[in-house]
Length: 363
Image (cartoon, rainbow, N blue to C red; front, side):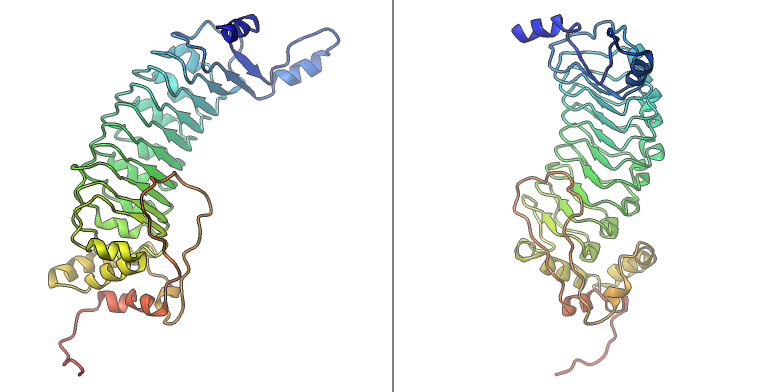
């Protein structure tokens, strides 16, 4: 209460950083220059039920922090005035909806709405075309806007864990700049088609969808940049053979699944062992070969096989992360090392995709 009293005695309970207030001896030019400086309006942790009337101009606020309050709604008029806001943080409130005027925030790059009571996001959010990071964890979301990915081409991080999502929108496949996707602790029945379009994706976490998620799409093997994959605690019995092509994968967890293909002892042995097992299966039955044939053009298109991989005796290193992605759960992970020439020869397109010849076995 003492802190609240201090806040009320200093500007009505909110803090504006970078604001130049007029004072004796300060020239008008200097005052105007300060007024144009980027500003952060911090109204976090004030136990507010509603946002008080703000008489100050909001047009030059670049960061607005309303987190850790008891807000049940945000007035449309306030959001519409935040024409230059870049970061909007409203996490840990009691919001049941977001104002439609959020679509006016053409410069918004980071939006954090986690820890609220949201059941959906407004369709106008797709107008925030500068958005790079969307955090909507710990809500009650049952769906995302169907067209979300058609406009948010610059989105790099999407976090929607701990919700009630049964599906991700099909437009997710258009988020070609996406590097991290966290959809754990939902009710996902499947991952969207066209997953192979996410060529920049480095971290994918779809763990703990429990009995709902039973399989992974074949296109997951075309995620050429994927370094971290967590599919633990689902109901997956078989991994797609295409995962044998994930040469950059350095961390993988499949604990808590009823895996039979590959057997869990192969998965736990090493990433190289798992990749080798799945790659060998790609030369399997006639049915498997017919399915492989339809994927050959995509494997080439998305550079799953490179000239380096096709050259015998050359090794491909699994590089460390250039940029830290989402924090993965503390499950046991498997570290991929330097692939041996023998292993790479198993991934040769000629070996993977050529039909078996009925040649006599050598004794």
